[in-house]
Image (cartoon, rainbow, N blue to C red; front, side, top):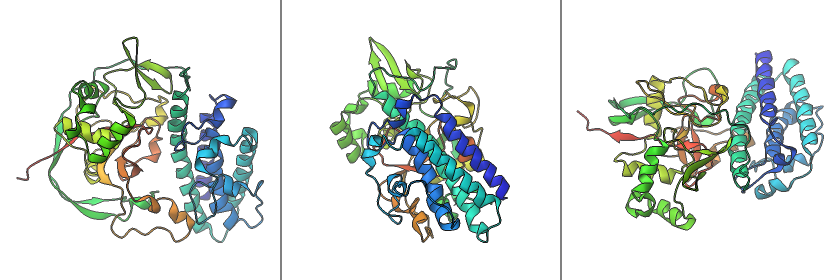
Length: 416
Protein backbone atom coordinates (compact mmCIF):
# COMPACT_ATOMS: atom_id res chain seq x y z
CA UNK A 1 0.00 0.00 0.00
CA UNK A 2 2.76 2.49 0.89
CA UNK A 3 4.58 1.81 -2.40
CA UNK A 4 1.36 2.41 -4.34
CA UNK A 5 0.54 5.66 -2.58
CA UNK A 6 4.13 6.82 -3.05
CA UNK A 7 3.90 6.14 -6.79
CA UNK A 8 0.64 8.10 -6.96
CA UNK A 9 2.29 10.90 -4.99
CA UNK A 10 5.24 11.03 -7.39
CA UNK A 11 3.00 11.02 -10.46
CA UNK A 12 0.90 13.87 -9.14
CA UNK A 13 3.86 15.99 -8.08
CA UNK A 14 5.55 15.46 -11.42
CA UNK A 15 2.38 16.37 -13.27
CA UNK A 16 2.17 19.76 -11.54
CA UNK A 17 5.64 20.61 -12.76
CA UNK A 18 4.91 19.37 -16.29
CA UNK A 19 1.93 21.73 -16.44
CA UNK A 20 4.32 24.60 -15.72
CA UNK A 21 6.70 23.80 -18.59
CA UNK A 22 4.97 26.07 -21.17
CA UNK A 23 5.28 29.07 -18.82
CA UNK A 24 7.77 31.87 -19.17
CA UNK A 25 9.61 32.73 -15.98
CA UNK A 26 7.60 35.95 -15.72
CA UNK A 27 4.33 33.97 -15.74
CA UNK A 28 5.05 32.28 -12.41
CA UNK A 29 4.14 35.41 -10.43
CA UNK A 30 0.89 36.38 -12.20
CA UNK A 31 -2.02 37.27 -9.91
CA UNK A 32 -4.66 39.39 -11.61
CA UNK A 33 -7.15 39.41 -8.71
CA UNK A 34 -7.12 38.47 -5.01
CA UNK A 35 -9.20 35.35 -5.71
CA UNK A 36 -6.51 34.00 -8.06
CA UNK A 37 -3.08 32.73 -7.06
CA UNK A 38 0.20 32.74 -9.00
CA UNK A 39 1.53 29.46 -10.44
CA UNK A 40 4.55 29.66 -8.14
CA UNK A 41 2.31 29.93 -5.11
CA UNK A 42 0.33 26.82 -6.12
CA UNK A 43 3.59 24.87 -6.41
CA UNK A 44 4.70 26.05 -2.99
CA UNK A 45 1.38 25.77 -1.16
CA UNK A 46 0.79 22.15 -2.17
CA UNK A 47 4.30 21.42 -0.87
CA UNK A 48 3.52 23.28 2.36
CA UNK A 49 0.49 21.03 2.80
CA UNK A 50 2.59 17.86 2.81
CA UNK A 51 5.20 19.48 5.04
CA UNK A 52 2.66 20.80 7.53
CA UNK A 53 0.28 17.88 7.85
CA UNK A 54 2.72 14.98 7.36
CA UNK A 55 6.39 15.77 7.80
CA UNK A 56 6.21 18.00 10.87
CA UNK A 57 3.91 15.74 12.91
CA UNK A 58 5.22 12.33 11.77
CA UNK A 59 8.92 12.78 10.89
CA UNK A 60 10.68 14.09 14.02
CA UNK A 61 14.06 14.69 12.34
CA UNK A 62 12.57 16.78 9.51
CA UNK A 63 13.87 20.34 9.24
CA UNK A 64 12.09 22.83 6.99
CA UNK A 65 14.41 24.62 4.52
CA UNK A 66 12.72 27.88 5.50
CA UNK A 67 10.57 28.09 8.69
CA UNK A 68 8.91 31.29 7.44
CA UNK A 69 7.22 29.27 4.66
CA UNK A 70 4.77 28.21 7.38
CA UNK A 71 3.20 31.68 7.14
CA UNK A 72 4.04 32.48 3.53
CA UNK A 73 2.28 29.47 1.99
CA UNK A 74 -0.51 28.85 4.48
CA UNK A 75 -3.76 29.42 2.61
CA UNK A 76 -6.51 29.61 5.22
CA UNK A 77 -5.66 27.21 8.06
CA UNK A 78 -6.18 29.35 11.14
CA UNK A 79 -5.40 26.36 13.34
CA UNK A 80 -1.84 26.41 11.96
CA UNK A 81 -1.33 30.13 12.43
CA UNK A 82 -0.97 33.39 10.50
CA UNK A 83 -1.13 33.66 6.72
CA UNK A 84 0.45 36.02 4.21
CA UNK A 85 -2.29 38.30 2.79
CA UNK A 86 -3.94 36.52 -0.11
CA UNK A 87 -4.06 39.58 -2.36
CA UNK A 88 -0.28 39.98 -2.03
CA UNK A 89 0.77 36.53 -3.20
CA UNK A 90 1.77 37.98 -6.55
CA UNK A 91 4.27 40.29 -4.84
CA UNK A 92 6.40 37.39 -3.62
CA UNK A 93 9.33 37.61 -6.00
CA UNK A 94 11.25 35.63 -3.38
CA UNK A 95 11.53 32.73 -2.93
CA UNK A 96 12.49 32.37 -6.56
CA UNK A 97 11.03 29.73 -8.83
CA UNK A 98 14.26 27.75 -8.46
CA UNK A 99 13.99 27.92 -4.67
CA UNK A 100 10.37 26.75 -4.77
CA UNK A 101 11.40 23.82 -6.96
CA UNK A 102 14.16 23.01 -4.47
CA UNK A 103 11.59 23.18 -1.65
CA UNK A 104 9.49 20.66 -3.54
CA UNK A 105 12.44 18.32 -3.95
CA UNK A 106 13.30 18.47 -0.24
CA UNK A 107 9.74 17.67 0.75
CA UNK A 108 9.44 14.91 -1.87
CA UNK A 109 12.56 13.24 -0.51
CA UNK A 110 11.25 13.45 3.05
CA UNK A 111 7.83 12.06 2.05
CA UNK A 112 9.60 9.10 0.42
CA UNK A 113 11.43 8.47 3.69
CA UNK A 114 8.18 8.71 5.63
CA UNK A 115 6.31 6.30 3.35
CA UNK A 116 8.95 3.75 2.49
CA UNK A 117 10.24 3.12 6.00
CA UNK A 118 8.28 1.41 8.78
CA UNK A 119 6.29 3.84 10.91
CA UNK A 120 4.03 3.10 13.89
CA UNK A 121 1.38 5.57 12.64
CA UNK A 122 1.24 4.36 9.05
CA UNK A 123 -2.54 3.92 9.30
CA UNK A 124 -2.85 7.70 9.75
CA UNK A 125 -0.08 8.67 7.33
CA UNK A 126 -1.34 6.91 4.20
CA UNK A 127 -4.82 8.56 4.20
CA UNK A 128 -3.21 11.96 4.77
CA UNK A 129 -0.87 11.48 1.82
CA UNK A 130 -3.86 10.56 -0.32
CA UNK A 131 -5.69 13.69 0.84
CA UNK A 132 -2.57 15.69 -0.08
CA UNK A 133 -2.54 14.12 -3.54
CA UNK A 134 -6.20 15.05 -4.12
CA UNK A 135 -5.48 18.51 -2.73
CA UNK A 136 -2.69 18.95 -5.27
CA UNK A 137 -5.02 17.80 -8.06
CA UNK A 138 -7.45 20.50 -7.01
CA UNK A 139 -4.63 23.02 -7.26
CA UNK A 140 -3.69 21.70 -10.69
CA UNK A 141 -7.17 22.69 -11.81
CA UNK A 142 -6.85 26.04 -10.06
CA UNK A 143 -3.50 26.51 -11.80
CA UNK A 144 -5.31 26.52 -15.14
CA UNK A 145 -8.31 28.61 -14.05
CA UNK A 146 -6.14 31.22 -12.32
CA UNK A 147 -3.60 31.36 -15.13
CA UNK A 148 -6.34 31.80 -17.73
CA UNK A 149 -7.82 34.69 -15.77
CA UNK A 150 -4.46 36.40 -15.39
CA UNK A 151 -3.40 35.93 -19.03
CA UNK A 152 -6.75 37.33 -20.19
CA UNK A 153 -5.99 40.68 -18.53
CA UNK A 154 -3.02 41.15 -20.87
CA UNK A 155 -3.93 43.20 -24.01
CA UNK A 156 -1.69 40.87 -26.03
CA UNK A 157 -4.06 37.96 -25.19
CA UNK A 158 -1.14 35.54 -24.77
CA UNK A 159 -1.74 31.82 -25.10
CA UNK A 160 -0.65 29.20 -22.59
CA UNK A 161 -0.32 26.74 -25.50
CA UNK A 162 -0.57 26.87 -29.26
CA UNK A 163 -4.06 26.04 -30.45
CA UNK A 164 -4.52 22.38 -31.28
CA UNK A 165 -8.17 23.01 -32.06
CA UNK A 166 -10.63 20.26 -32.78
CA UNK A 167 -12.92 20.21 -35.81
CA UNK A 168 -16.29 21.74 -35.04
CA UNK A 169 -19.27 19.42 -34.84
CA UNK A 170 -22.96 20.21 -34.73
CA UNK A 171 -24.33 19.83 -31.24
CA UNK A 172 -27.23 17.36 -31.15
CA UNK A 173 -30.67 18.62 -30.11
CA UNK A 174 -31.41 18.53 -26.41
CA UNK A 175 -33.43 15.54 -25.31
CA UNK A 176 -35.02 15.11 -21.90
CA UNK A 177 -34.55 12.05 -19.74
CA UNK A 178 -37.16 11.32 -17.09
CA UNK A 179 -36.40 10.02 -13.61
CA UNK A 180 -39.16 8.74 -11.34
CA UNK A 181 -37.96 10.13 -8.06
CA UNK A 182 -38.41 8.39 -4.72
CA UNK A 183 -35.92 7.63 -1.96
CA UNK A 184 -32.30 7.57 -3.12
CA UNK A 185 -28.92 7.28 -1.45
CA UNK A 186 -26.72 10.40 -1.65
CA UNK A 187 -23.03 10.61 -0.79
CA UNK A 188 -19.94 8.55 -1.41
CA UNK A 189 -20.18 4.77 -1.37
CA UNK A 190 -17.11 2.57 -1.66
CA UNK A 191 -13.68 1.86 -0.25
CA UNK A 192 -11.70 4.45 -2.21
CA UNK A 193 -10.91 8.07 -1.50
CA UNK A 194 -13.51 10.78 -0.97
CA UNK A 195 -13.52 14.18 0.70
CA UNK A 196 -15.23 14.54 4.05
CA UNK A 197 -17.99 16.71 2.56
CA UNK A 198 -19.19 13.71 0.50
CA UNK A 199 -20.12 11.90 3.72
CA UNK A 200 -22.04 10.48 5.41
CA UNK A 201 -24.10 8.65 2.83
CA UNK A 202 -27.77 9.24 3.55
CA UNK A 203 -31.23 8.94 2.11
CA UNK A 204 -32.81 11.76 0.14
CA UNK A 205 -36.31 11.98 -1.31
CA UNK A 206 -36.47 13.19 -4.90
CA UNK A 207 -39.62 14.25 -6.70
CA UNK A 208 -39.89 13.07 -10.33
CA UNK A 209 -37.70 15.18 -12.62
CA UNK A 210 -36.31 15.47 -16.15
CA UNK A 211 -32.64 15.99 -16.95
CA UNK A 212 -31.22 17.58 -20.12
CA UNK A 213 -29.07 15.34 -22.30
CA UNK A 214 -26.25 17.87 -22.71
CA UNK A 215 -24.95 21.23 -21.55
CA UNK A 216 -26.25 24.57 -22.82
CA UNK A 217 -24.23 25.77 -25.81
CA UNK A 218 -22.73 29.14 -26.71
CA UNK A 219 -25.33 29.53 -29.46
CA UNK A 220 -28.21 28.88 -27.08
CA UNK A 221 -26.82 31.32 -24.55
CA UNK A 222 -26.41 33.94 -27.29
CA UNK A 223 -30.15 33.63 -27.94
CA UNK A 224 -30.74 34.47 -24.26
CA UNK A 225 -28.56 37.58 -24.67
CA UNK A 226 -30.30 38.56 -27.93
CA UNK A 227 -33.66 38.33 -26.15
CA UNK A 228 -32.52 40.91 -23.62
CA UNK A 229 -31.60 38.43 -20.91
CA UNK A 230 -29.24 40.84 -19.17
CA UNK A 231 -31.82 43.63 -19.23
CA UNK A 232 -34.79 41.70 -17.78
CA UNK A 233 -34.85 41.79 -13.97
CA UNK A 234 -37.75 39.33 -13.80
CA UNK A 235 -35.36 36.56 -14.86
CA UNK A 236 -32.87 37.13 -12.06
CA UNK A 237 -32.60 36.42 -8.37
CA UNK A 238 -32.44 39.69 -6.43
CA UNK A 239 -28.74 39.32 -5.58
CA UNK A 240 -28.04 38.26 -9.15
CA UNK A 241 -29.73 41.34 -10.61
CA UNK A 242 -27.81 43.57 -8.21
CA UNK A 243 -24.57 41.91 -9.31
CA UNK A 244 -25.43 42.32 -13.02
CA UNK A 245 -26.10 46.02 -12.52
CA UNK A 246 -23.06 46.69 -10.35
CA UNK A 247 -20.65 44.80 -12.60
CA UNK A 248 -22.32 45.66 -15.90
CA UNK A 249 -22.37 42.06 -17.08
CA UNK A 250 -23.54 41.68 -20.65
CA UNK A 251 -22.14 38.24 -21.54
CA UNK A 252 -20.14 35.36 -20.02
CA UNK A 253 -16.62 36.07 -18.88
CA UNK A 254 -14.02 35.88 -21.72
CA UNK A 255 -16.57 36.65 -24.47
CA UNK A 256 -15.48 39.46 -26.78
CA UNK A 257 -16.52 41.02 -30.06
CA UNK A 258 -13.96 42.58 -32.40
CA UNK A 259 -14.67 43.94 -35.86
CA UNK A 260 -17.97 42.10 -35.90
CA UNK A 261 -16.40 38.73 -35.02
CA UNK A 262 -17.50 36.83 -31.95
CA UNK A 263 -14.45 35.72 -29.98
CA UNK A 264 -13.62 33.93 -26.76
CA UNK A 265 -10.42 33.99 -24.76
CA UNK A 266 -9.04 30.55 -23.99
CA UNK A 267 -5.83 28.92 -22.79
CA UNK A 268 -5.00 28.86 -26.51
CA UNK A 269 -5.38 32.63 -26.70
CA UNK A 270 -8.16 34.55 -28.41
CA UNK A 271 -10.16 32.30 -30.74
CA UNK A 272 -13.47 32.33 -32.64
CA UNK A 273 -16.43 31.48 -30.45
CA UNK A 274 -18.14 28.32 -31.66
CA UNK A 275 -21.90 28.02 -31.23
CA UNK A 276 -21.67 24.26 -30.68
CA UNK A 277 -19.35 24.42 -27.66
CA UNK A 278 -20.77 24.54 -24.12
CA UNK A 279 -21.16 28.01 -22.69
CA UNK A 280 -18.55 28.37 -19.99
CA UNK A 281 -17.42 30.81 -17.30
CA UNK A 282 -20.92 31.79 -16.25
CA UNK A 283 -21.88 32.56 -12.67
CA UNK A 284 -24.53 30.70 -10.73
CA UNK A 285 -26.73 33.77 -11.11
CA UNK A 286 -26.37 33.69 -14.90
CA UNK A 287 -27.02 29.95 -14.99
CA UNK A 288 -30.17 30.40 -12.92
CA UNK A 289 -31.43 33.29 -15.07
CA UNK A 290 -30.83 31.36 -18.28
CA UNK A 291 -32.68 28.34 -16.90
CA UNK A 292 -35.68 30.50 -15.99
CA UNK A 293 -35.65 32.10 -19.47
CA UNK A 294 -35.55 28.62 -21.03
CA UNK A 295 -38.57 27.46 -19.05
CA UNK A 296 -36.50 25.12 -16.94
CA UNK A 297 -34.41 25.21 -13.75
CA UNK A 298 -31.04 24.14 -12.43
CA UNK A 299 -30.90 20.61 -11.02
CA UNK A 300 -30.42 19.97 -7.35
CA UNK A 301 -27.13 18.33 -6.44
CA UNK A 302 -29.03 15.20 -5.37
CA UNK A 303 -30.73 14.97 -8.77
CA UNK A 304 -27.40 15.37 -10.53
CA UNK A 305 -25.81 12.66 -8.41
CA UNK A 306 -28.72 10.29 -9.02
CA UNK A 307 -28.29 10.69 -12.79
CA UNK A 308 -24.50 10.34 -12.65
CA UNK A 309 -24.65 7.28 -10.39
CA UNK A 310 -26.74 5.42 -12.94
CA UNK A 311 -24.89 6.56 -16.06
CA UNK A 312 -21.37 7.84 -15.30
CA UNK A 313 -20.42 8.01 -18.98
CA UNK A 314 -16.91 8.57 -20.33
CA UNK A 315 -14.54 10.76 -18.35
CA UNK A 316 -11.76 12.61 -20.15
CA UNK A 317 -11.17 16.17 -19.04
CA UNK A 318 -7.53 17.08 -18.58
CA UNK A 319 -6.35 13.60 -19.52
CA UNK A 320 -7.16 14.04 -23.20
CA UNK A 321 -4.88 17.08 -23.39
CA UNK A 322 -7.48 19.54 -24.70
CA UNK A 323 -7.95 22.53 -22.39
CA UNK A 324 -11.31 23.82 -23.61
CA UNK A 325 -14.87 22.47 -23.40
CA UNK A 326 -15.79 20.29 -26.38
CA UNK A 327 -19.20 20.01 -28.06
CA UNK A 328 -21.51 17.13 -27.26
CA UNK A 329 -21.35 14.15 -29.58
CA UNK A 330 -24.12 13.10 -31.92
CA UNK A 331 -25.12 10.23 -29.70
CA UNK A 332 -28.09 9.22 -27.63
CA UNK A 333 -28.07 9.33 -23.86
CA UNK A 334 -26.85 11.83 -21.29
CA UNK A 335 -23.53 13.47 -22.13
CA UNK A 336 -21.00 15.89 -20.66
CA UNK A 337 -21.45 14.90 -17.03
CA UNK A 338 -17.68 15.16 -16.76
CA UNK A 339 -14.82 16.59 -18.78
CA UNK A 340 -16.44 19.76 -20.17
CA UNK A 341 -17.75 22.21 -17.55
CA UNK A 342 -18.63 22.12 -13.90
CA UNK A 343 -22.41 22.32 -13.67
CA UNK A 344 -24.13 24.73 -11.33
CA UNK A 345 -26.86 23.28 -9.15
CA UNK A 346 -29.51 25.15 -7.21
CA UNK A 347 -28.28 23.54 -3.98
CA UNK A 348 -26.66 25.52 -1.20
CA UNK A 349 -23.35 24.11 0.00
CA UNK A 350 -24.19 22.74 3.42
CA UNK A 351 -23.19 19.72 5.52
CA UNK A 352 -24.85 16.37 5.05
CA UNK A 353 -26.84 15.05 8.04
CA UNK A 354 -24.32 13.75 10.58
CA UNK A 355 -21.31 15.48 9.01
CA UNK A 356 -18.33 15.73 11.36
CA UNK A 357 -15.11 17.49 10.32
CA UNK A 358 -11.78 16.38 11.71
CA UNK A 359 -10.92 17.80 15.10
CA UNK A 360 -7.51 19.24 14.13
CA UNK A 361 -6.56 21.97 11.64
CA UNK A 362 -7.03 19.61 8.69
CA UNK A 363 -10.73 19.74 9.51
CA UNK A 364 -10.75 23.27 8.07
CA UNK A 365 -10.36 21.76 4.58
CA UNK A 366 -14.08 21.85 3.72
CA UNK A 367 -16.33 22.33 6.71
CA UNK A 368 -15.80 26.01 7.43
CA UNK A 369 -16.81 26.97 3.86
CA UNK A 370 -20.33 25.59 4.17
CA UNK A 371 -21.97 28.99 4.03
CA UNK A 372 -23.27 31.24 1.22
CA UNK A 373 -21.93 29.07 -1.60
CA UNK A 374 -23.58 26.90 -4.25
CA UNK A 375 -22.69 23.35 -5.19
CA UNK A 376 -21.34 22.48 -8.64
CA UNK A 377 -21.14 18.91 -9.86
CA UNK A 378 -19.23 16.96 -12.48
CA UNK A 379 -15.83 18.11 -13.62
CA UNK A 380 -14.32 20.24 -16.34
CA UNK A 381 -11.87 20.11 -19.21
CA UNK A 382 -9.11 20.84 -16.67
CA UNK A 383 -10.12 18.13 -14.17
CA UNK A 384 -8.20 14.86 -14.13
CA UNK A 385 -10.38 11.82 -14.81
CA UNK A 386 -9.57 9.92 -11.64
CA UNK A 387 -10.20 12.98 -9.49
CA UNK A 388 -13.96 13.26 -10.17
CA UNK A 389 -16.85 10.93 -9.34
CA UNK A 390 -20.66 11.11 -8.95
CA UNK A 391 -20.52 12.22 -5.30
CA UNK A 392 -17.83 14.93 -5.71
CA UNK A 393 -19.05 18.31 -4.40
CA UNK A 394 -17.39 21.43 -5.75
CA UNK A 395 -18.50 24.80 -4.38
CA UNK A 396 -18.21 28.45 -5.30
CA UNK A 397 -20.00 31.70 -4.54
CA UNK A 398 -22.84 32.24 -7.04
CA UNK A 399 -21.19 35.36 -8.48
CA UNK A 400 -17.93 33.51 -9.34
CA UNK A 401 -17.21 33.15 -13.06
CA UNK A 402 -13.51 32.35 -13.39
CA UNK A 403 -14.02 28.63 -12.90
CA UNK A 404 -14.87 26.42 -15.94
CA UNK A 405 -18.57 26.50 -14.99
CA UNK A 406 -21.48 25.81 -17.33
CA UNK A 407 -25.20 25.09 -17.35
CA UNK A 408 -27.19 21.86 -17.17
CA UNK A 409 -30.99 22.18 -17.22
CA UNK A 410 -33.58 20.20 -15.33
CA UNK A 411 -37.37 20.26 -15.12
CA UNK A 412 -39.86 19.17 -12.49
CA UNK A 413 -42.44 16.50 -13.38
CA UNK A 414 -45.82 15.72 -11.98
CA UNK A 415 -45.85 12.56 -9.87
CA UNK A 416 -48.10 9.87 -11.36
